[in-house]
Image (tube, rainbow, N blue to C red; front, top):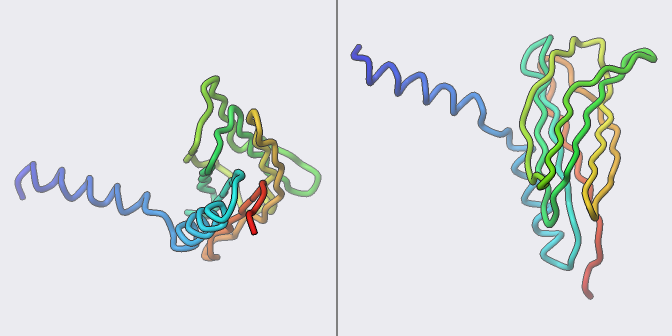
Length: 143
């Protein structure tokens, strides 16, 4: 196999590994449709366990940005910082992962923006379970 072909296969495998699950795409589409009916903001969060020690985290905001995103994992009264990101300009999306074994069962999500300050408590899936998706919608709808 030549070097160019090997590099192409590695890149294709890497892109496949970061493909979003159908639950994510469905939640984003649903939030967009809801916001199209009026004005407001949305945040969609995905928690997906890639192996017994790793949790993948995705965030997408619609209609706003957040300057700070904090993800804290909880287990039997113990809290650890799973992922934290700050941006003075604001961010619309975030993708990362955290080393969390399966004893961690819940993720507290705190988002801070100029107009958008939600908090969400989500279940962290175990190995082999479907990803968890949480959606936060804020705003008004027109009749």
